[in-house]
Image (cartoon, rainbow, N blue to C red):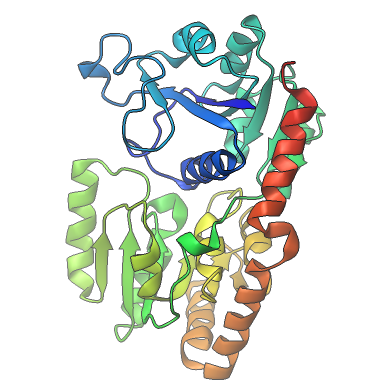
Length: 342
């Protein structure tokens, strides 16, 4: 089967995020099942491109599958469909409805696969099928369009994240306001004995990064780490994942990645985070006082028995059968095969 992943926003490594990481994981796993995969995305370096930054179908040598980075991905659909000849397309980020319409005009059925609730307004009822990364996103899609989405969890290759659980840092990924950065700063101030590491995920503007560095320098127990496709060094240093998000999270990929190594999480009750954490951590209301957050952190950090219990639960949660990579790929391929072009 020839599968084209489409989006109207940039792709790895020009941009970062859990959804993009999931796309790469899917492409890699599908290739191992003898599928041909390709990605169509926007070129972040628009000023340097004429129409296509690279020839159609040419592997840009970042990954072992072709990635076409177009200044206008919607305008590139017809050409890449003629070149790659997909049996089906998976549309995920940006103008989902616009991309589905463009694919429909080319006679290519499309699966709309949503990774956050904020993409729901960009979707209409013209896709061949719908999938969502969590029950929260599936419910939002049903509420908006009265369509049923197959819940397709994030894909975690255990070997790509497994590390010895020897870290002594609290890890906070994507240090921006909507992810709860002020809560983390407050916790770092209350616990100067604990080391925190902030991991960039989405690209930060230069002035934002400089401001963040200035604030971090004030505390003395926080370090800032740039984005990376290999998160094992991050988790190797992690004792606890902190995810005090203030917006409606679709899932919480960082939580699932860390649980592979038995690293528990302290997270808010936003969106799909409780579903991602399960029993493998502690959930705090996102509007809770800082004293409640501090109490939860103290328990996980200082109570050895409590921490080990949550660590064991995190490991068990990551190993549940329905979350296994092969099981998810089986379900994903079954869904695509129901709708692919003959």
